[in-house]
Amino acid sequence: MAARLRRLAPEAAAMSPGAMAALAYPDRIGLRRKGDEARYVLSGGKGARAGRR
Image: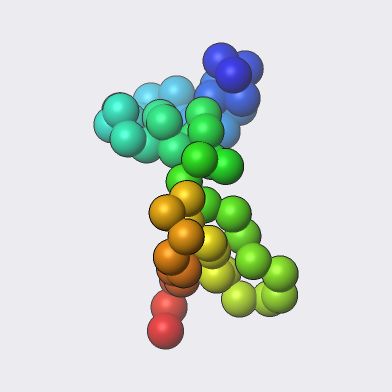
């Protein structure tokens, strides 16, 4: 997990605990749906979109 954080997170940027948790456990936040759009199924069962509308 620490190696993944070092690889994904910029060294100089200060990160919030939430951002660190999202990088460490992305599967516990949501899973990407199939297709080209940035659509996700969140851990609570609801859907979400990322990016522009």
